[in-house]
Image (tube, rainbow, N blue to C red; front, side, top):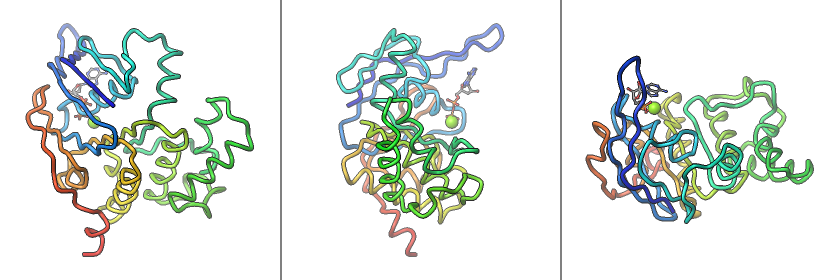
Length: 235
Ligand code: ADP
Ligand code: MG
């Protein structure tokens, strides 16, 4: 699904170059659930943003579902992004003046889907995340966990090939974090490929594989026995 070879990324900081990714080699098969771990500033978001076509690498190759991601103009990149990728962020990134339903339906609007179909589709995904009764509520009427569920429904609504989550539980207490991870695990159980950036060990162990980033390189890449969030909630 994802094939990355010798990926490099630097940022210009004043007169200097900050070399953040220094030759990443990485591949992900369809259906995997991978945690990307590392301390703050280790380049996790930079890496995820490149995978998500929100940013471009300086050097190296990236193939997503057989498509080389290189030198795309902005509109082609946007169209691939819509088609291939769903995003979940720490801060939810919901539109504050739109209802839960409209937030979920928004990406479908940009895909040119007709109103009735997008409303039905958005409602289906709100049901899937357990928020059918909250469809007409605004984000500020929802708890943090509910907001993240809306964001997950929004990410799923266009049926992306890969779900990219950047610290999805970073703004949530641990019980709510585990509830959100339980939902993400169920989505992976159904076959969705998921990459999840986190700096929390317990969250990383709820994935099936952990990639450790350090000093711009992958230090360790290990398969792990998945801890089920549901079990963590029971204790
Ligand atoms: P993480 O998500 O692991 O905390 P980031 O990928 O956000 O790390 O950042 C990695 C490093 O790159 C940090 O030192 C950060 O300050 C720097 N950085 C990130 N984005 C930019 C940018 N747009 N311009 C300059 N430096 C940046
Ligand atoms: Mg980050």
